[in-house]
Image (cartoon, rainbow, N blue to C red; front, side, top):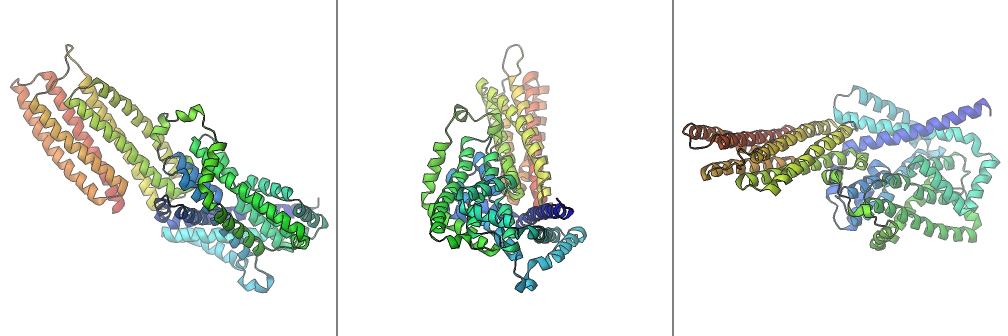
Length: 558
């Protein structure tokens, strides 16, 4: 191998690296600029499968990877926030949305007669402008636009590098004969496309390389391009299949849906194209360009969706046949799956969705804690040993939840987030800590009721119980408002929490003074008196932490 061959090899690998990094950078910038719009895509998902297809296409057009979209869908299904029927629509749409990268590559492969319009001519300017905007602009939005421009510039420069490095080899009889061989052997072409895409973990990237080779010297035949493209469609399922390991049965079924859908499409088109090329061999041996590959790639995805859309329910049932239920699936609700209802590391593929679902999980933690507070208050009003044990068990779950959610928030905070999203994550850290402290105060109340002296349970007078009931009602309502404020970013609910907190503070001072008076007159036993004051103090601290939760929401609004 000569020094030129080594140089060309290094250039091709470097060009591929720039192409992949450019795709990643551009995708990250688009996701940031989209902001809450990506969250809105998930919210509009209904049982209307056509809507799900459109959402899947739009989402994949943004992140430019059908594999990544499917991995997120697995995460959503595994977390219980999306059904399999919704997921099949997302998967169908994802296959269409991924075609946008092929058209971007085609745009970069403009013929010589249109050189003045070729994006590769402006790629260095895009790259340079993008880097300057990232480094010297003080406004986050302009930095995001700079990231998109830099990614687009790198993508086109990478394509040029790959095309230039491959050009010297494309005229070789060995290369020409190899593509003819692949075109005449459908299974070989599909196998090559599957393996290459599985290695690269992206059908957009593998098809982009194929388009670059096709545009370089015209060595790629129509039949070879089509069969390799069909294989790339199957290979794109690899990230989803790997990601499904360790998920619930429905998570595995989501990955199998993606694979079944793409295999059926490849088989149907593979048979049709094999017959056509057998009848018209000259058509199969005809050279294809980058635009021709994009046209086939897009048409194939759209026709597959139209063809299989009416059979979506059948595909869902078929996935159940391939992924059998195991004994472990019947008892999947271990401590972690109970606590982490909305969080799944697959959702980290999209920072916007990760932030949105982190908020939902913090709210879920708050709801569990609010229910535990309600149970502890019931024990105060009417001692119940079974309910008391449930309070202690739930507190362990809350502690576990704090650890898991905090670890997850650390991962999200290291993603490519906007400044506003970083602020939300910071507030979620504080919120988790406050909710956990509320759980501790609830446990303190339960422990007070568990304490005994001389074998007798703590008993409060009707007057004391009435006073505690009034405070507990205010505290529970205030905490519920704080959770609603966090869930809906509601300023009205947050302001209402402040009013509850003021009332609790005033009432706590008033009742403390009254009870100390009863103790001094020996109208209440010391044991009951201390228990009353301790419960009152813990309730007041819960109200304070609820007020903190509302304050974080107010800060975000401001």
